[in-house]
Length: 255
Image 1 (tube, rainbow, N blue to C red):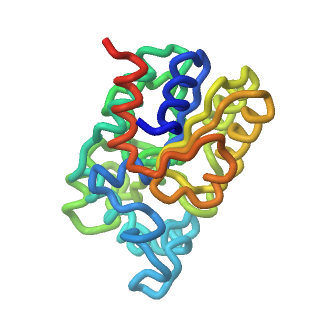
Image 2: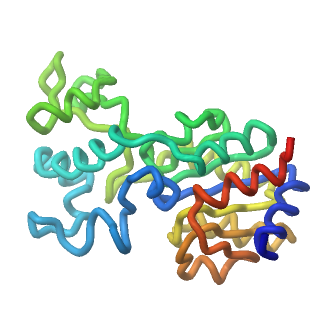
């Protein structure tokens, strides 16, 4: 075990209030493509000649729902074919054993919930891929897999309106309930913030990291690359989450 691992283990073992932040990197080991970078699902423009930010946007869903759903379906099929990995399960165990451990995820695959993370301490800041709901009448549908096998965009059985997932598309606002929950927990403060599989620099990621460091807490990043975020934390473990997280949990809870 290297010094960085040892320090992260020691800090997590003693911490009462913990925030784990996860990005696409944790689900890469489940076979899901990361949004950006090497092996990413989208690099540059889509085959339709549009930036993915335009194709997967709220305005595009209204203007051309078939085009938007072409790329939503690509993500959906990848998620349906995959499952939570050892990293998701290790975080769930950490949360189950530490009642002050919260989880903030950028991912929309639903794997944290499926792995056993407590829903009351899970903030899915970008939403999830299901259940779908009708943009016309509001009725919901759990049959994402079925809709993905039929012509797109999926349509409501009741009114014929376009169905959509409860995800935050580009040019849409983050959910107020999730933001309020995160703010409430930040007000209480965290002993440790652990970022996993993300290199993003969104305010909702940077703020808890910077505030925790400012207040004397400990911050760490588990990510093979890390980018700018690696320079903002106390420790950076440059390895895959599905390898590192189970080791951390085994050492913190050796029983």
